[in-house]
Length: 137
Image (cartoon, rainbow, N blue to C red):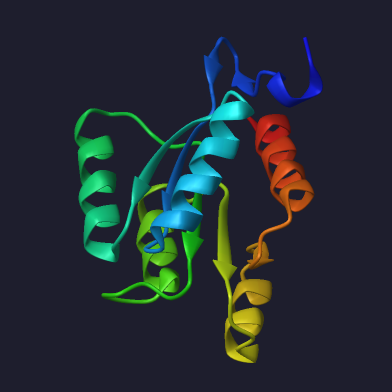
């Protein structure tokens, strides 16, 4: 099987990630790349939409294997999504992405051991994060 199509599976199922990104171009690109890695993803474009998805996932007694969140969202920061997600799923990997260079975001993410990806995203960094998720599952 070619390298770009390697399965990212937990047991017999694909990894499931939530992407929270308000820029449709970035969200689509990340989602498409994840699909090429055999990772299932859902895209939320606002904090509110992400919280609704999390409630739905809890309701059906399911979970995500990871969450990739943009810092700048129209209705809140990505830090809020991560905090609420961690309240419900404390052991599930999360990562923050940003196009900015705010030192407080870097300090916040480092103090919580949350990977911070700078835009434009480097696919090898995302791949490394996916590999860590797979290994920890």
